[in-house]
Length: 312
Image (cartoon, rainbow, N blue to C red; front, side, top):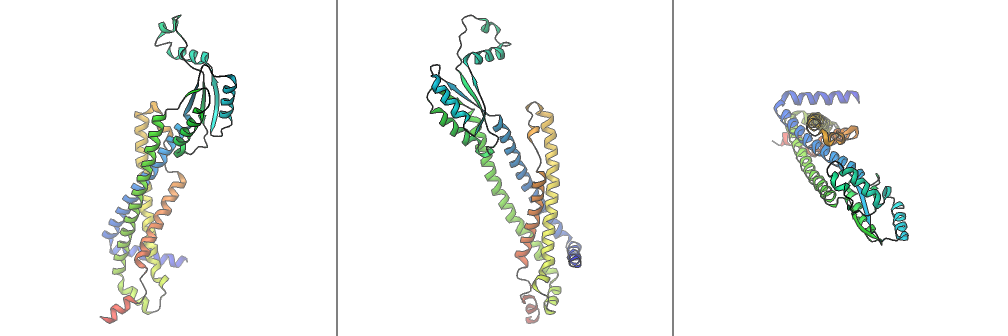
């Protein structure tokens, strides 16, 4: 096995020595492809991280009517507490809501709050948060479903959770993910074509060698293996360059976020691909290179090369 790998490596080196331009062009195109694939993948992961973080902090406010009965209030509380999708359920009476408002507005409108005729316009409410078990892409749908369910309870005046931005952001993430997968599939198809062209050029340069191997009875796997190794290694090299390039882009963007948007703490929710994502990039690169080479070399050693030689 070790000697076979050495032979495959020698064949790979020969391709680079005799076809340097073709190999460099192939590697450049593949590296650019994997850079884009890695960027889309990293962007998708980070958007999901942000959505998860926001989803955990999304708070539903269930406003109840002033005339709600104690039984209806108890039934509503029980329904909220028994819903596994919800957590941190707390009841805020009218008086507490007013005191909180006065505390928050003390700096801005002190005269208004000192007014003896200032009424209590705030209804009692339940403050509820989503469970962390909810998948990021399901946040918007879950919130909508819970709101509709709660709205049907007697005595509930309104359910608020920032419906607009949650729905819009979730739709944006979903559309971007769908577009990202389309882009990735197109780039992968193009990568197969690029690898196939490089392997085809290597086969053309070694036609005489392949004919001799066919004549001495080499098996199909023996002839095809070096080219499959070359394709897989080319894909792995391109994936490595793509990961390094994406890490550079990630570091640069992170520094911009930390310096310009530190107040929003956006950088705290941004991360790189992670060990699993990096390994997936490497494996994907090797597989794409292998498949691209296989689609080209599958017809080698069917007698075609030798018959072409002697028929001419």
